[in-house]
Length: 228
Image 1 (cartoon, rainbow, N blue to C red):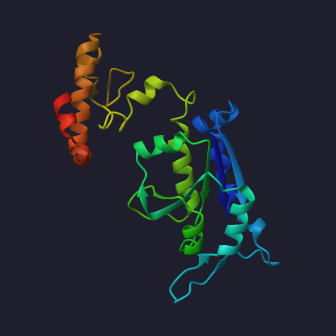
Image 2 (cartoon, rainbow, N blue to C red):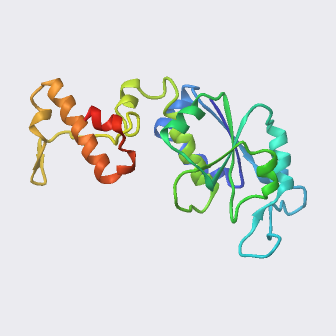
């Protein structure tokens, strides 16, 4: 998988790309991340990439010219061109899995009040939101997307780990415990200590259902109810 990221601030990705699962995936060459500095495609001496919006209003908008030049330079034909946007479709596990099936994804990081609509109309194939809230930059959203997609790629993490995660089976993940057996006045549930895998599996499913019902009742379906 190749991620090509067009950004005003490539430096913010430095620590993210060097750590944990993403860092190991890069070392194994399971993913490649190509950071493209948008300012390299600004043609004036000040490398200006933003301007005030037509019609007035607060903030600045990323200009169409440098964005178009950058997109043409990286190549867009046949590729998914993603714009992280609060106005996009919600990123969920199913959509992340669909994107993980692509060979290359181009991510355009907005900033300030966003990007010129003509870039969206001409180049963007997917506007995607990471949630119903606002973050300061598209770089933050891009890192969330890269992480969510990368961990679904074959060989990045074990398939067993993926199968038991939240959202994989339509429910939130069950509670996890490790040593010591008692701390803070709380004990590990006895069912996890008896070695009976059938009982453990049943307990975990029940706990997943209870957690989902409490925190994300919108995920409960008829299939969930039948399984629980």
